[in-house]
Length: 320
Image (tube, rainbow, N blue to C red; front, side, top):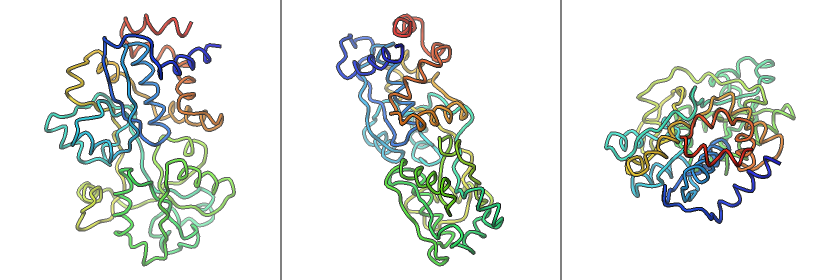
């Protein structure tokens, strides 16, 4: 019953009856992958029901969101921005146009190329990129790449050149969405088939299956920085670094709505908790909105510490 009531409150947000004078209009990016969508839905719910905001969700992706911040100074809030894949963010922050609200993953995010553990158990050489490229047939001769618009797509495209995939008979398959990328990994693992591809964490698929991060060699900050740009003159070999993952806001918004800025500065998740939530979502074929409802009902003590006293008083009756 409690989940039904909260879901009803979510639905009501499409046609809000409350006054939004307290907060005003707020645009929030909704990135096109599962964890970011859930975080955005949780953020939206707390902003609307607790702070009286009139929220507009803006479908987005890493490159799209940062470009829009640079050119249009919007959206106001961008949850789950992987700044290692968005070098323009550092420039915008230095210029004072945007600011960090929080590390939305308390322990950071991961980016790697993966193969299944059963392949490495049978062929230990597949634990390294050199071993994979020397034996492409053992991983199916295909690399599962990021969708267009993701920051990792630019880095991967440059890494593909640096590691000479074409000369080593390695096909690149560019996925159309994060869902198909994860589904390809899951399908291969369930069938114990060859697989080689990119994935970030936390994600449900990495929480459910034993994947081995491929040794791509040492991380070189300068090479990685070049690989993140579409005009990198000399793509090079470098592993991904540990990734800071942020919620960022425009400076204008932080100054205009300090209470809401404080809220989004408090919203963060551990990788383990978020992976469990994503696994719940996958196991229940749930939407991001339903996953947000599940999180809010199961973690009242956590999110109550995120909101101020006035917002808590407005939200409590929904969760009685």
